[in-house]
Length: 169
Image 1: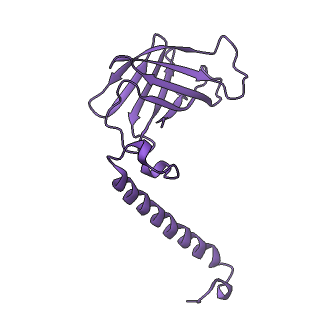
Image 2: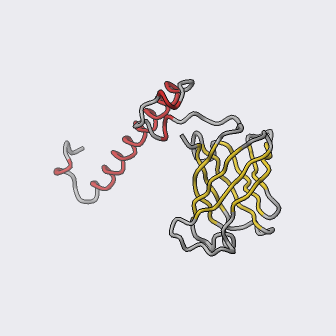
Image 3: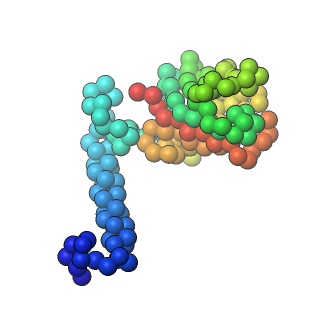
């Protein structure tokens, strides 16, 4: 086997690069897991600001006062565009509020929404935010620690709608 990249044939260089990236990805993944375990139980204000996603603790439930920020996409509700989504839990255990914010300020008044919702918890780690027309049906830690991700259903339209939010620090 050649000792350096310069000695390799052009056919084997991409394979070597792919192997190197895979090894680097595994090392980063392992570091993230170790860092997550090290920071569990430490309040967010005591953590360094540069810790990033790997140091967020997993969610076991949501509680009043939690605020989640992320995005939502739906064929009708957002015209297939990715809009900002804010979901707040509270003041009670089973109530909350959510709102859609158009990041490009193109949102028409008839499509903007801000209002109350019910918070429904499932035994299998699922959670739903529901109002009369819209359902955000998600999974705790679905897109990584400290996140909720899932499907968006609006007016009975179940296909093509997705959302993802993370706990705001």
